[in-house]
Length: 113
Image 1 (cartoon, rainbow, N blue to C red):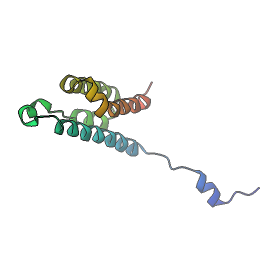
Image 2 (cartoon, rainbow, N blue to C red; image 1 turned 180 degrees about the vertical axis):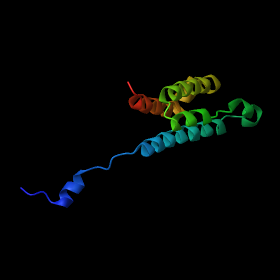
Image 3 (cartoon, one colour; image 1 turned 90 degrees about the horizontal axis):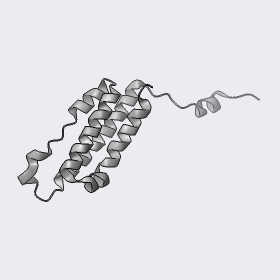
Image 4 (spheres, one colour; image 1 turned 120 degrees about the horizontal axis):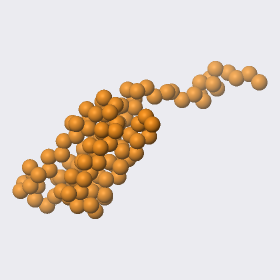
């Protein structure tokens, strides 16, 4: 049996580079940031408490860029705890918790053993 070049090429998936992996992490973090912004925008009286909800992901972003995944996981857990404290467990689990948990899960799979 002879395998032609087109058949072989069709079955090979392109490999992800480390830059692709880093970009995927940033995309997940951007989704979390957007969900937090939506959560803040939907509070009943944002004007009276707007300073309370200054969630900043720049530390997490920097850790992800530097492949410091364990530290990024710790910061994500702190962020989630702070969100729960500010908005309540139910709201966070409905609005942003699954996205945070997803990024944590991805990072745990990528962390060296």
